[in-house]
Image (cartoon, each protein chain N blue to C red):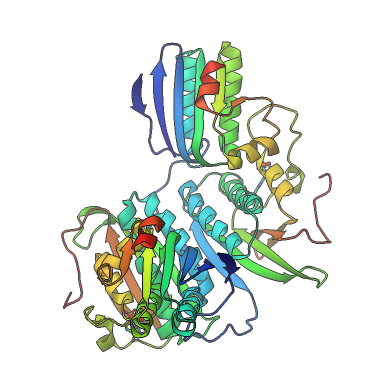
Length: 110
Length: 110
Length: 175
Length: 175
Ligand SMILES: Nc1ncnc2c1ncn2[C@@H]1O[C@H](COP(=O)(O)OP(=O)(O)O)[C@@H](O)[C@H]1O
Ligand SMILES: Nc1ncnc2c1ncn2[C@@H]1O[C@H](COP(=O)(O)OP(=O)(O)O)[C@@H](O)[C@H]1O
């Protein structure tokens, strides 16, 4: 997994690629919580376009991020989920809990 | 590996996809030799666009096809080779022996 | 132009056709309880499902189940300790438990960690929005057969998926 | 906008960091001498090379070498007979043979087939346009170390590739 941040006024976009699995979800969790809890960035976007795989520990990290953003009164927004990630969201019954958009344009406009 | 034939007047195009390895090169060999030796088709094209991997047994089958086409006075033409296939051609020092084109348009116009 | 599919299964030139062997082993993997190795297993299992012509969605479901089960072995059976042995055996099944002809993939995971507590194996209600507790849920949702057992001092988890749903689908109670 | 790379290697939450283990086993595979299983091994080895951050071209060269070597075991050592055992062990190397720090992938293939004839192991001149005789050439071209041996009744082929070319590269004579 690789995670890179694009920071701007009032928001941060994380471009994530590869596999968010047991070996790598802690790295994503740390990045997310840093932006949400510590820096209190109003909108944090996750670009999931190049995420090949996400496991339950990755989902758990996203849920932690979502909870932290609710506590902080900020937003966590996901976009460009491929079939594999969508399926896991559905299996976890989380597709309605998260803010999910089809692409970056729609996510940024939301 | 999957191999499908598009037959037309005076030529046949084989669209090959997947891995041409020890398990599958006999199938490609059979298809090639059928078209070249038995049917004596003047031009046989191999569309390699979706070939993910080719091993030395696959290369051996191509060489057999090339020899058969020389014997028959016909042409065997390859196109749309990806990096992986190109490397194997170079390792085998065969890139100058085969007729190789960048894409279908160039191959058909040749 | 006319389209003819030439796909067929064939043995290599000079290779004698497969002789009947007692077991239909596809591959056995031995790894250590290291999260970095999970990606290797996912790749292997993915190809094994392709070999058996599972659909893409089924492939992803199987890969996910094996990955989650291995993650559980690492985190729970081995309590996060690395360097401990895990074995994964992938077999092709040609008959189901009633002897009916099927195509199935059997995956057997074996570890020498602490034996598991069956009471904990039910997974949790999803209504509760909290991190964790999803792995078993994914597995039970995805596989046709899921059996935990303890044999010769080893934990075994046997999972089976059929290319077409088998008549006899063994699901844990409560699913 | 400013770009910050956050890539780091990290252990999972609740997982103790790797303890030093005697060997750096990545994965061991057991398969039968069946050409259909080659695609499984290629996928596994590909991921192992990704784990060690080999470049794409190096990855393809390593995968190709393992595949060709296994094809030779099936065709030559086992004379095309299927169902016979082959073992592939992938290890991460941290030092080369002189003890210098490196990152390397060691792949050990083991079979119980007929012992090979070293005289045949040179490969052939490529000028001669004929099918066959390319596999060993691919292997010698691609790997940094290639060693055939026979131990405990087993044929062993040990191949090593370093992420950066090592100082001591062992090539067979004549290459
Ligand atoms: N291989 C295992 N060994 C021991 N306990 C296990 C194993 N797999 C699952 N469990 C138990 O079942 C529970 C539920 O597992 P799971 O649904 O994967 O969620 P999580 O691992 O996030 O808690 C675990 O918390 C653990 O107590
Ligand atoms: N694992 C092996 N066991 C026995 N003989 C082998 C083995 N690998 C290679 N050889 C010998 O080396 C020769 C050259 O091998 P190779 O370059 O792969 O080409 P090919 O297999 O097409 O002949 C083979 O023909 C065979 O005689």
